[in-house]
Image (tube, rainbow, N blue to C red):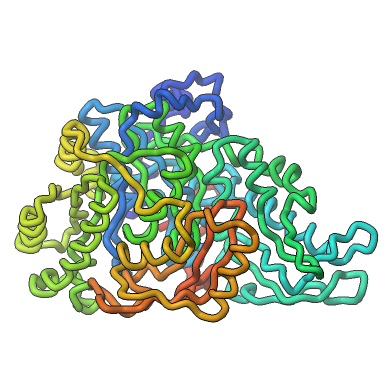
Length: 555
């Protein structure tokens, strides 16, 4: 059956029942129908959160075959609950771009899903819409100020990099010119659109800890310069109050349920290559406030989402993860070992062994943060026992726990072995999280630490444009911000064609963007897509709704 068919067979529990299971009284939640609700920020308890065990689910370098981190995260939370450990899974919200494009939604799969999957994948509680409106309000205020004669900050339009956003894949909007149509229609300038998940406001919302923190961060958004080279921030446009008002509900995390009727929190969805790639700090703290175990995930491979989770989110919010579950698939490792994409379902022990260095590097990277890993083999029907044994033997040789997980086919039952190993790691108290770098290190020091230690680069090059941006960052006094390196997810290097574990490569920083509101710098390497395009046959072609309001064709 498809994911949607499986989801429709489940008798959902009323969200008030899930809230009570989550230790929150039904009167405290804001219901969005029967099966979704917003949680109040006052329900976060830092003292209780400090006693919860935080588990991060990550993966090896992504491949077109997919690794299944979200499915693994949900299945693990089900398995832990089956072992009588009060557990909540905390995830990101799906973007409509991938939903209607080719990648699909982000609610798990098979018998390891969060529900109601149709609602979560389509609009949900309107968080993305609110972020889009707040982002575009600032864009409108910027252009209005450039046009204004009586309320002008004398913004030099050539220095403005703030684009507009929309939550759909639309390549035609990547580069546009606004302000055409005469003097009453604005000042013509080149700009464009990003997808909503790439908005700095998405990153800000997911790092803010309350409304006042959100408002301050929004005010800190760097807009550009005046004609006499003075920096302009969103607060200079008096934008932060109205933007925060638009986000008053979006800042509250969303409560839903898993297939097995356990609590799940879904909130925020920043990209993992140009932002921190994980759900909101508020959502994570909410889960930790009401659970003994909290399972969360970070986008793409460990080198991207997990590094940013540790060095940005954990340092910002004071979080200390106890375990990293490193998701690996046999077909992905075969791809990293040189097997053709079309042949990944065929047994190929030789290619699998050649792909193991990718797994090895990610395990080494986890150790740099002093957190204990467990390798989770996300099993597919085509995987052979011989191939599974290769990974198990490799993990044994490395002294790393390994578990075979069949969460797609069996849900929580398929994660019992993994859950037991996670509990064993936590109870053995072998982790003592430490970040890779201190924020007060120099900008180039931070970039090179990540490039050399995590990616395995030999050297970092900076273009003339990037060097100019380093001077700009210094002049603005923003050198103490952490770095959020934008890099391809397909390789440990900045070249998507270098699979496996590349060595002796050079990382080239083309430019460095300033996300002063989010509180990080973005060194750009390679080609980073912020507005994807649709494929020749987008997933939307197969979607429909019948006269009874039932959606069909969603995955």
